Amino acid sequence: MHTRLRPPDRIIPLLELNPFIVCSICNGYLVDPHTITECLHTFCKSCLVKHIMDVSLNCPKCKILIHPTDPFIYIKHDSHMQDIVYKLLPHIDLADAQKMKVFYEKHDAANTTVTKVKPWRSKKRRTVYVNLKLTCLGPRGSEHINQPQPLTKPFVQVAALATVENLQNFLLHKLQLSSQYKVTLFYNGIHLTDLTSTIVDLKHCFGSRLKELFPLQYRIQRLPTVFTAHKSFTLQS
Image 1 (cartoon, rainbow, N blue to C red):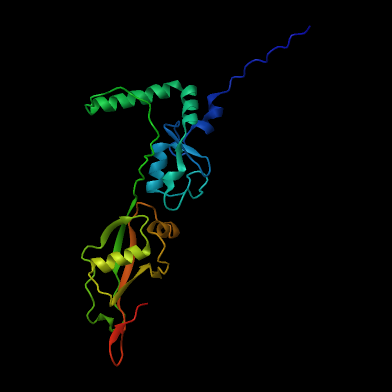
Image 2: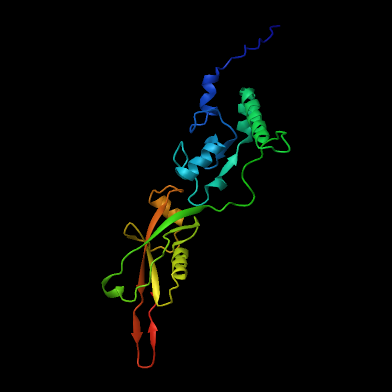
């Protein structure tokens, strides 16, 4: 009776596995790997968060849009990939633990025991803010008469999910304008007519990075007053 010989184990060079365990942002081995659920590409947590906050809301590898308003919901801690990296490269696990220990000792932490890192996403959703520069456009025609004063401080910070309508109402309140006035918003001369558009939608539409200062312009207009035989009222547009 012939015995079936087991084929010899194949030794795979680490170089062949590098494309699967290397972060394409920093070109180093994955540390605390996080995967984008939309395209399943994996990166170091710190690299991916920095990319989203400073560069783009798109995947660094395939350029697919992660999410226009809250990309962090679609990023998950990849424990399986982390286990694979630590099994292939056990020295990385030890190096990470040593770095954490040095950090706690340096900052005089009471407990320097290194524990397993939990997924970074908090149950409480973090509010993302956007920095705006609001420039007042000059009045048109004879509207300069009794024209309200513009903002004394044009730089403001608002939630990324704030809408155009929210920003208009903010300006009306900040400038203490009555119902006789309305505020319209512009981006480089483009009238922002969709009041439901969020600021992060506009930044993505016009190719502005999330942390870049976003310049918008506003114009204050006095609504025409219509007089009748008995009373006068202001037209609302």
